[in-house]
Image (spheres, each protein chain N blue to C red):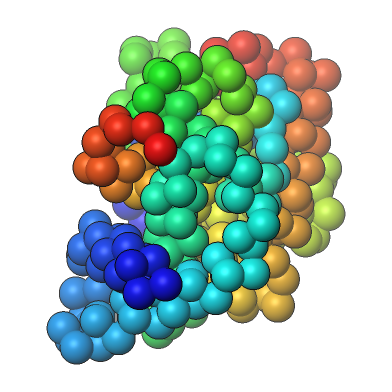
Length: 79
Length: 181
């Protein structure tokens, strides 16, 4: 068994403290969240429950990282 | 329609490229086949949900998420297809020496010990299995859903309920959890 830092493990075991959306709701709103990040920079403040879910769900966090990367590549042009 | 499919295929290839390390054993043409499958399924999903696009985001961002999702699920399943998921709540990580100092290390170790005991006493068998698989064994949630015949949403609810139960018991026992936002 490999030795691991306890802090990330504790965070994963206990999850985010605040209210969070479900995986389904996260998928529904992820494009809005990402475009707020790219175009307005206020996603976390505007959508805190989704931000909390991204801290608690590794799969949704991966999906978010990919969508953010490709949206940034597409640039900051609205529409 | 052709433009939309091309956009989805681009996103699927983008995702497979990001996760290339997980697909090290997959040949180039199989990888392209995975990208096409993901783009095709995303296209079908989008056709069924076009009415749901409300213009709150750019259309490209909205469309990309379907292709990225389809590609990511395929990558995670492919990476785990020959790996057994052992649902064993007795599996437990060995702690490294990374905490801020002896006091912090002791506090974290104590908390982890308390969690380990609570996993055995305060959770249902299903919550226990899901929590350990997702947080200790790092099994991707959609792989676990496939193996258990469940859904990502149902498993995340079990994880959420398990975490809430652990937090509640730890707080009642006087553990300080304020540092975990």
